[in-house]
Image 1 (cartoon, rainbow, N blue to C red):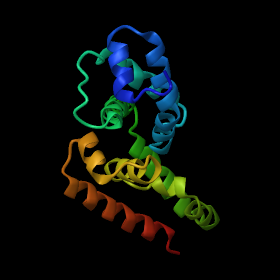
Image 2 (image 1 turned 180 degrees about the vertical axis):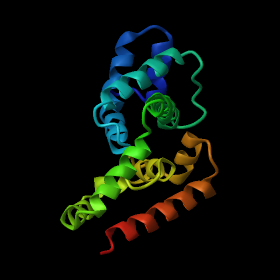
Image 3 (image 1 turned 180 degrees about the horizontal axis):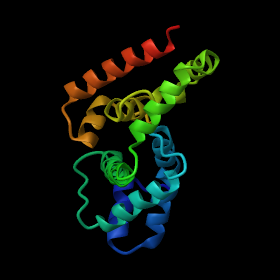
Length: 175
């Protein structure tokens, strides 16, 4: 079953073959964990991956191979991430925590210099809308078109967000 395409596996899953689902999970689990960790969900990455695969299984009968499978999968992942953020925002938003960390780092010059050297830390100074585009493009290897489909925004908006993100990251790395 490992030789089957994602489309074929989804068809087998629709027909009740549980092994096909396991193959699909094994194939896409690590990239999804990577996505969520890069988005800042360090401790919840595995839970978000599990939620994404639960959603995939739930939508197995509705799935149509109109676009790349990863577009569909990352759309489900984005929805799981957004739902997670909504839950967190009841107490404290992730962006507020990241902003507080960045502000705290400003008072300590040594810590700030170290943070500038760390690309992962630099990602966290970006607003979530910019960060998700950077992570999907640079770390997940998705093209602008696929990011556009996944996020439900025009390709031009993806390009604009990438441009803004790169400029903000350049500012962050400048001493």
